Image (cartoon, rainbow, N blue to C red; front, side, top):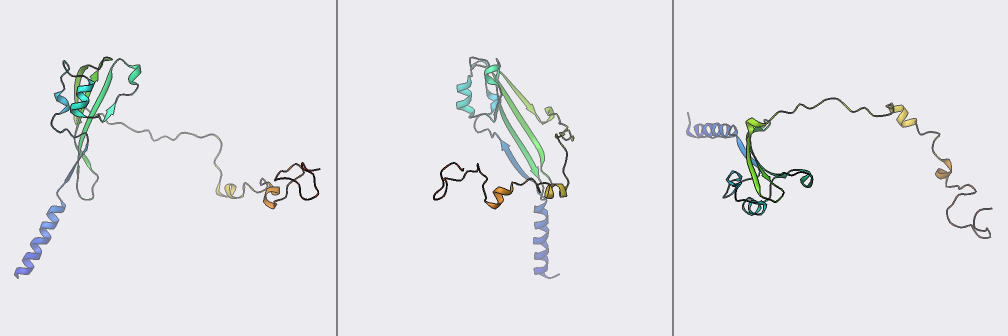
Length: 172
């Protein structure tokens, strides 16, 4: 074989092989110096957690109604091959629980194995009334349109300003 042909074959093969390498993408909270798991329930408060870790990914809802406030730091890694749907490679959820005074009470960590698949319901919510056909939608308004508004003529009590020259205001 000729050297340029071998070189072209080698370049094409390397391009194909690199196209099969996965692309990893990190989503959500990315820990910098300290990981959320390093929070100490004995000494840390909301202020210290916020200053060390930054804002959480999600805060629990209805904070004022519950005795327990929870901050969630969520990190996930997705792997994607060329044109295929991305697959979840890893997920870490750190839940930091606070008491009403702002003191850390518990730190819990959840992984990908702790997730529960949710089955979506395929049913549709019924609507009131009936469905109109295309012809009913097109021709349904014929006879219902106010003709006086289409022609620009106003009835005796119509209103569009005052009377003309020599006519008193108010119609008759």
